[in-house]
Image 1 (spheres, rainbow, N blue to C red):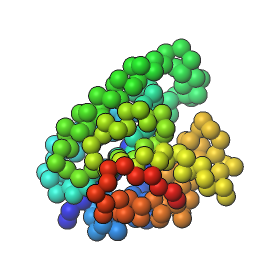
Image 2 (cartoon, rainbow, N blue to C red):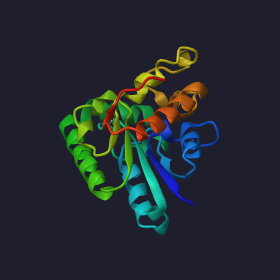
Image 3 (tube, one colour):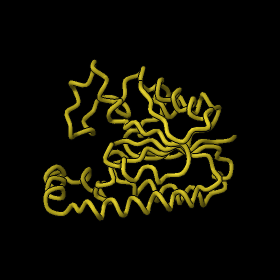
Image 4 (tube, helix red, strand yellow):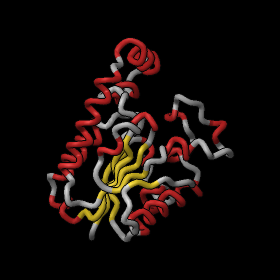
Length: 203
């Protein structure tokens, strides 16, 4: 069976029935593959993709979809979820160690590498945060430029349970309510039928 690969951060972590990755795969009649890494940088997404591309099943992958996270996240940020002092460690990193130039430079080269890895393949890129807007145009393929976090914050019914910055505490799956999950999947399908490169969407 032909497949779809969806990778990124917490915006694509949940992928059972009712979650937008599963809905999208079902709409396109494709087998869902890939992985989402909540609270993580792009590094583990890259590692997972490289392992996937080394397998035979990648040959039958018709579409790749990526949820591109904040370029300034700590590259090995999974440590924050494995340590009881995670919040304190994260705050120290943001205050004392974060270098915005390095974050942007490394992410830029990840985007360029991704273009090369998936050249001649159908790819859709979703921008999770506006912090990547200056380098997001470097990505080849279809780009959904509306930050997913902005779309998520429009959910007035449950947004009181989500306090920035702490998306990992969000009770919603992939940071969207059920109606938004359905809408996002359909918006991606709609983009596939267009010749344009950049799209602004609403849910």
